[in-house]
Length: 479
Image 1 (cartoon, rainbow, N blue to C red):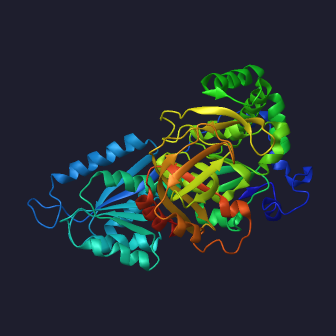
Image 2 (image 1 turned 30 degrees about the horizontal axis):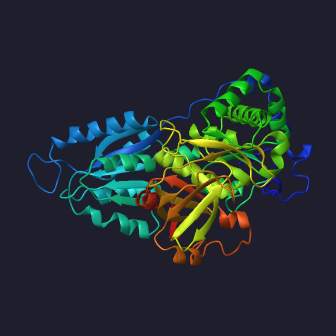
Image 3 (image 1 turned 180 degrees about the vertical axis):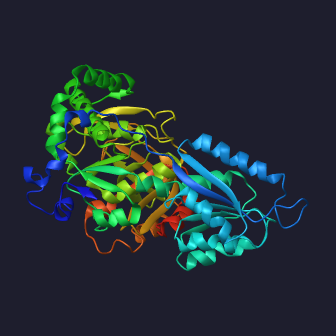
């Protein structure tokens, strides 16, 4: 829910939205509480059910010697992902499945691994009754139950199917299933106003659909942390930005210091609120505070989505991709060049570590913000030419707009538009222009809501189709 503000204030429609009366006294916590470090998020528990009985010889089943292999793979997935915990058991019918579901807990999604013939439908009865998200792994030759999951899905169940001989699909299933419990345990910080589609900006609907709590924070709280930031830490952060830059173009040292101080303030708010993501509304009005762009880059590189312009649709998109793929996103405005069959994305900030927190950072320039007379300090990130990408946006909490492409051009030093830019070859730019929004954004004329998409490294279209089924979201391909 939106703590400390009304629904009207959360939506940013109140003229006094930034006034002192906006936030309740519940925000005025004691220092002893605000100084506590953030607690790690509990692991996402997944109920892994081996459905059916193995045999001693080859038939329409796994053999008994295959079962330890399955357990080993599940253990390796737990160790690799780090934030997943399996509750593993075997069941041949609904009665045997029920205690496993109870042991896993009411929020645990289900990974059903088809082991033997004719058990899956019975085992899945309580799963479907309890409306749990579920992924079914059906290896070839282990029965005929692969026919049923998509029938259940078309009837409204949050179920998807991975019919494959590749054991790595178990990891993919775990990555996608963990999104559901991780979202339910998440808190995001909003510095109002919120923008985007009505559903994405409604804290009650967000809570109902995604399970996420929204914590509204007044700008003056940021100001307090900005002034109180440790001078030595600010100097160190500014020096790091300057020393690691390929070139410092417009910003002065004071500009970089101001941006580094803003970064420290954002870090402090994230820590205090134990939040997994943040968005700041009215970014262009923040120059006197120090633009948050450098701070947003650092947060994204650490696996914390940080979104410009209060764009709630982009925030939910980034959070879903972070949990599913451990990847940061590049949120930006989009425009087309049909002569190159291309779509450009441009914005004032972007992650350096688009391969994830453990990846290599991209090179960057330090630039002034192009939309405010080159004031401030923002990164111009030089993304990887030749990289396949996914461009996405969850809108209305109901539709995932999606397209894929490949980066074919990145300016050495941008001249027009926002500083960080990438140009991607797409399947059919002319068709994509015509289908922009996929028909699900016809109710809005807001340029930001229409323009913004989030770019991620890698082609994740197949996995997002699976995730959409688990979240009861409709996939809409834009191009």
